Each structure stands twice: as structure tokens, then as C-alpha cells.
Image (cartoon, rainbow, N blue to C red):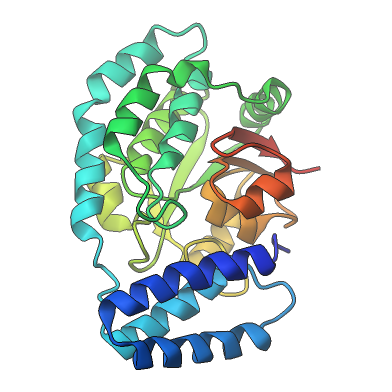
Length: 289
């Protein structure tokens, strides 16, 4: 199951990728790329989501233009440092909150702003700085949060599916607060198996100071497409009592799957605005069903 791609996603994807193609080469190459990706779209499976399409596009870009899959390494390193530098202040605000787990969740959802794919050319660290000041005003669904805490209390294993670099530092804080409240829980982090846009990999997890066990999804897909993930993640998902899925990529690729998943993200694109009937940058913490 997934939130399948539609005409809005296709238009957005082509607009962004063709803009990049024209930067990297001449119009003949961009036209050849456009024809090839349109052929893929025309014959794609009905349940295809944009994370799968993105991985195909990345492969084409690497083959046609020699595009470095790890081209955003500098931006990812800066994102990690940006959040780490603010860690003492953020931790202090979490510690002083009436409910530190909820406060950490607010910061973790806000951290989903660091998405260089969905917000191509729009990410501003000054904007993030301003957003941090009002992080604890983010309104998250309290019923789903209470259900989440109850599931954590009863469960034994939490699997945390991460999304972007920088954001993963906020995820670390949330997982640490969860561990404090529910010390019986076994918490495992999952990152991407290979570089894809600014998504977090093992290198970013290490930079963020993650001390929990870490696995990866075994792919260069910016989501969790179940038919392609590696055996480590398949096993972890089967054994998890609770799963946190961060970001739109994990949400769209897992939506409707038969796991106990809580989705945490900011609404950042037209497709999600229409699907969830929410305004852009609405903070979301939801469990399907």
C-alpha cells in the first residue's frame, strides 16, 4: 500500500528534475531525459509513489549526467551541525516542559522542515531558527499522542524510521525522551541504505550522536517501499510493536501497510495538502485507521 503518485506529483517531479537537467547539460540531453522518465511513468505500477519514481530518476541522472548521489554531503553536514549547536537550548526547553516526550515530538515534527527534496531551493536556516522559537506551539493530535504513549507503555520494541539529515538530531532527542519514560523499550533507528538527496544515512546517524542500534533500509529510495527494502528492515518491522515513520517519503510509501505506525511530518507539497486536507506546513502526528 502507499499514497500513489498522481498528476500533481508527476508535474512537480518533472518540473524539478527538468530544471536540474537543464543546469547539468544542454537541451538535447534534457529532452532525452524527459522522454525516458515519461516512458517509465507510462508503464509504472498502479501503486507507484513518488519515492520510487525519485529513485529511478536519480539513477537516470547519474547515468546521463554523472550526478554524484552524495552531492548534498556539505549541506547535510551543515544541517547536522546547525541542530547540534542548538542542542543545549532545545534540551533545556524539553526538560522544562510539562510533558517532555510531547515537547520532543514537537521539535521532531518541526525538524521535518529540513527537506531539500520537497522544498527544493526553499529551505532557509534563518526560517528554521525562527520556527524553533515557536516549536512548542505546534498543535499535534492529542488523541493519537495518547494512543502512542499507551502503545509504548505496553510494547517492547520501537522502530524509528528517520528521514533527513539535521532532522535526525531532533529524532535522537525524541527517542531519548521516550527511553527515559519507557526504559523497558528496545529502540532501533533506521536510515537510508545509500545516499539520496539530503536523507539521513549511517554517517548522519553517527554525526547526530545516535546511541541506539542502527539499521538501514538497504536502498537508495527516499522512503520505505516494502517490496524493495533489505532483510534487516523487514525483520525489524515484523518484530516492532510500534513504528515511528518520519517525513512525507516514509508516509507515502507506507500508508495503508499492516503495521502499527505513527506518522510524523510537516505537510510540504500540494499532493499532501489535498490528500490530508491541510494547509502547507501543518504539523502532523497521526495513526491511520
